Image (cartoon, rainbow, N blue to C red; front, side):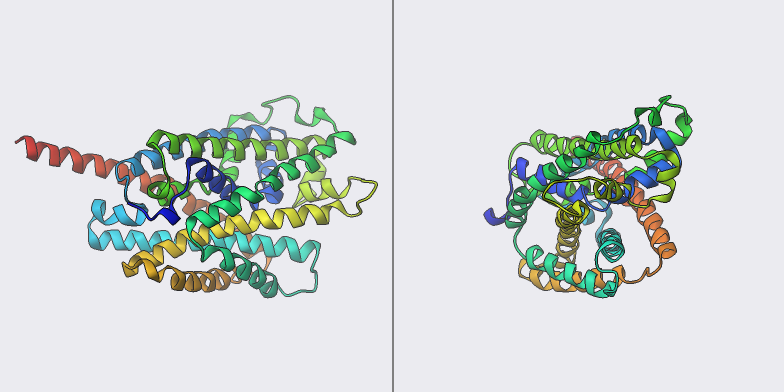
Amino acid sequence: MTEEKNSITPGQLMFIVIQAQIGIGVFFLPSEVHAVANGDAWISVLIAGLFVQLFVIILWLLSRRFPYDSLYGFLPKILGKQLGVFIHVAYICFFIIQGSNSLTRYGEVIQDWILVRTPKWAIIGLMCIVCWYLVQENLRTIARFFVLVSVLIVLMIVIASFAYSVHVNFLHILPIGKEGWWNIFKGSNEAMLSLLGYELLVICYPFTQGKSIEKLKAVSIATAFSSLFYVFLVFTSLVVFSANELQLLPQPVLYMVKSLSFPLIERPDIYFISIWSVMSATSTISYMFMTAKGISHLYKRRDKYRKAVKYTVVFFFIVALIPQDKQKIEIFNEISAILGYIFVFIIPLCLLIISIIIQKKEARKMNG
């Protein structure tokens, strides 16, 4: 059984997953999906959300077979000690790459829009310090913070909704389906990276109170909310900007918010970035938590977690500084997307199949 201070409720699990998913995609997703699916980009994100629900079920079925173990606990039980440790380390590397990618894109936005002359290492370093402060705490403390700042997501929706008070053109998305299903599904592939974060289920499952089906509902609701949130942002960007404009805007949501006018607020995009920075931090914290759990589990001692957090922050900082120009950042982003399919879908599906086969063999031996 897990320690009381590390246990969370299904509701807190839901907010943890939401905070892990809503991050860098807020600014980059609309233009990236539009580049493939054009006016049908919002459909691509919606389809991506449906695929995510399938992946969540696979992760849930796998975790349900080992209710008292996280991913790091049941890997050796399925694959054996040596191969289990190898995949264990591979997952740690995967989480480092995903979290570092989030830090890299965060540094890119802050440097482009606010701190133009500030070196990227300083921007990323400050974010790492903020994340380190919270990720060293227990899971319950992290969950409570995530629940607290979730109100900022509502504020982001409210601010973005003001775009409908200015000029919008719904003809930009018509006719629906004009790009063809092939391009729509290709756009869904672009959206999958922004929806990553639900893999937290295989780490937090044994620490979450309640029945197994309640945990599935919590993560399913979280991914549904995140998917609809991104659909809203993409759809709003599509009706505000023309196709030619979206091709030139790397962060259309920011340009959209910047164009808004409020009586008492100048440069609303700065306030929007400030809110988004908290979302970016929570997303990075989620991956730091999963990484630190993996590193500490290698030591087989719970008191090693805080020391593992220090190593984790250093790894994230170094890897996030590797891609310096925009071309390398795009390559880094593509690598993250490919690894996402491998570690969130392919490997868990293989682990699920192997665990079923092992269970059937053990059942035959007992009956024989």
